[in-house]
Length: 109
Image (cartoon, rainbow, N blue to C red; front, side, top):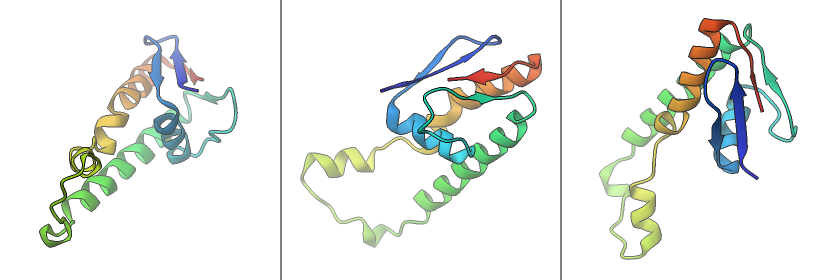
């Protein structure tokens, strides 16, 4: 089931289940809850948590030594090599949080 995040300050944001669960776990919310809220007061901490997780993911991706990556011919390896980093996945959500914070609005799902 995809997650649909809503705010009165922005358009709705839809995320696939795996990505939505990951985002909620990073900001300390329970992904098992069908509905939830990120209050305007909680938004700065949520943004900081997402940015820290994205920076950690980027550092981990850049720290992989070249010799660990073995050339493989299957499709899965090519898809994994070109996978989208966390910073790109959370960018629309962080933007939603920033706009919501600027207007003092909460984000719900």
